[in-house]
Structure formats: structure tokens, C-alpha cells
Image (tube, rainbow, N blue to C red; front, side, top):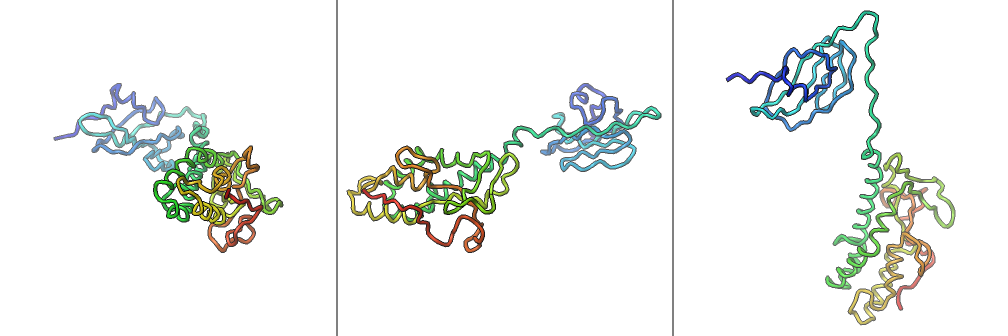
Length: 288
């Protein structure tokens, strides 16, 4: 059975608007099985050129016809228009060919992509720090508190500190604060209006070593009543030392801050975040 004639002469053809000038004349079309590919339109090409506009976005080639792979489902008889051959209109003598249309400006979605990447990384850092079953804090305190009290602590952290922690990655500029009161020698910064490429080298560094804070918590809790996750400790100060990316009215300046750092332990020369040694910048005891 022969395939039905393409609707190149009908209103159905005109509604689908192939990426050619309206006065191009369709010479033939080819039908095929339906495809899930989606046609990506290309700018108008100069007359007398061929534009193979497939899903991969090939560049124009010089020929005498315009060929457009539409990949647009017609929704009729289970077939699809996969290729159309159009004849370019004649160009009056002496008239230069039309220049390609300029590229459209970046869409708001594309412009916001670096910020979205940064926010996603903030969520990953939060998971690695506290909410994942194998997070840094869970490995120390999960076995000590037990399942019920550990989940109670995670719920408290998610409710009161997660939004600010992840929001610290919103930018628009994320910058290293330097080390020991001195500015970052690299002046390291990630401008999310441009790119998120530097994010792996920007760490959230605890001013008081995380392991030290958890050891204080563990010792105080074991000596307490053991009925809540914050028995024996100042729960507000504890959480500030663990998650404090913002200044707190009671506990002071942020204590979890951005510092540039290497991807792997042992490659930290020249970076402000020292991964091979604990941090003791103003020790604060969490027990009460």
C-alpha cells in the first residue's frame, strides 16, 4: 500500500511552517514512521543554500536547494513528515542575499542556570553534612543518639537551618573569605551571573572543626538525661556551630563560611581551606 500524499498543498502544511521563507515552493516530501525527535528551527538561510535542520543542528551547506528535516509529527495515519524539499525563490539581479537572522538572546531559564546549579550543590552539601544516612554528622552521632533521637535532630535542622544553608549558594557572587583574617590570595570568587564552573573549589568551611564540635556534643549527651538530642548541650549554640552560615543575634558572626579549597585531600597548597588539619578558630564549648 502506497503511503498517503504529503499535505504540502494544504492548510495543514502551512500551519506547521517549515523553517523556510513563506514564498519557498515545496517540491516533494518524504514520509516515515513516527519519531520522538523534535525539530529545532534554524535561522533563515541565504537563498541558494541548503539547510539540513535536523535534531543535531547541522550547519548550512552550500547547494541549490533548501532541505529541511522537520521531524514534526503530523498525527495522521501513523506517519510523519521527515523531509521536505523546497525551491528557493529567484533573487533579483544585483540584490545581495539576505543575511542570517541574529541569534535570539539567552532565555531567562538559561540565564538562571548557574544559580540553579549552585542551589542544587547547596542541597548536596546539606545532604553530605547532615541529612543523608551516611552524612558526616550521622556517622558520629547517629549511633550515639539512636534512630528516634537522630531523626528528631535531622527534622529540627531541616526546619530551622536548611533554608539558610542552601540559600547561601544563591549568590549572585560567592567569594572566599580568606584565612586567619587575611584576604584570599587568589581573590577566589564564583560569579553566578557568568558561570558556576568554580563551585567545586569553593567549600563551606567550619570555623570550629566539625569533629571537635561533635565530640563535645557526644560527651555532654552521654553525661545527661538522654531523653532528647540536646540533653547536656546548648542546642542553639550547637546548631550555630554546625550550620551557622548567617550571623545570629545570640551567638554572633557566621561560623560556616566559604573558602577556596582543592578537590581532593593532600592537594591544598595555595588554598584557604586547609583540609589536612583541624580548625581551632575560637573554640566554644557546647555543653551546659
